[in-house]
Amino acid sequence: MAAGPALAAAVSKAGGFGVLGASGMPSDELGRQVAAVRGLTTKPFGVNIIIAEVDPGDREWLVDAVGAASALHVAAVILFWGDAAPYVEHAHRYGVKVFLQVGSVEEARAAAAAGVDVVIAQGVEAGGHVKGTTSIWELLPATIKAVKPLPVLASGGIGDGAGVARALRIGAQGVSLGTRFVASDEAWVHRAYKQRIVEASSEDTVYNELYDVWWPKAPHRTLRNKTFEEWVAAGSPPPGERPGEGTSIGKRRLGTGEPKEWPRYAIGIPPPDFDGDIEYAPLWAGESCSVVKDIKPAAEIVRDLVRDAEAALTG
Image (tube, rainbow, N blue to C red; front, side, top):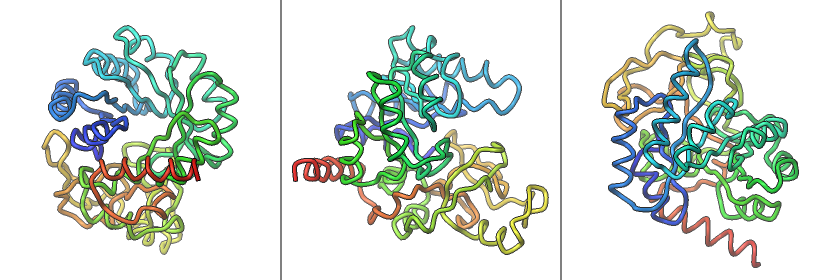
């Protein structure tokens, strides 16, 4: 996970709300990761869990995962890609807040009815897996109106203080940023991936379903790379007919330390010690890469965002 203990703790220590990536993580490993964050900061932080149900039995496993995270008394569980209703009570019984990231007003209304505490509106500009199909600047005001007085955060296409200020002016209670923090010292990803984000602009991102191994039919936004260009050069064939399909692009070490072969077109994030060519790996990035100009400590990123947002709001 790019958002490991170091990044989550650094963001929270700087005054933000750090989030620990925990999707697919066994409960014992989650416990170790949460303990690691608490060893670095006493500030509140959350845990992110993808609730997509891809295989039979996923619902039961996900309920257990949300319950396990909540039993650790983190400040919030942040859910994405599904209905929050089956999970809310498992967090609330421990006094843990539930955030759900949504891609439409209808999904936001359903989240509010399910009892979530915060809605994150995700625009189509976002990087990684994308539920949103409209611009954040259209979705945000409509979502705020639909679930008022529930707090709404903005996500997608925001990477600097000006974007933060724009979201706050519309009525967001805050923002949720991903791409900007991939280009941080603490993000647990390959250095070359961070540099690609710094060098990229929004025109270098593509929205499709190319990386579908282990998570099919899930639209996402990534940077153009060798996998994408070779697929396009072959005529953009469907799964089963794509160049290099079934081959490995290298080994990547999971958060547990276990090395695993990484199939071409599979989801995942290139860790710092990835032994393959990252240009064949999915390089998740949102359109906000256009305003990411450097790699720096997460605390500096938080301070820059606050300073520049305040300047925009008072200028």
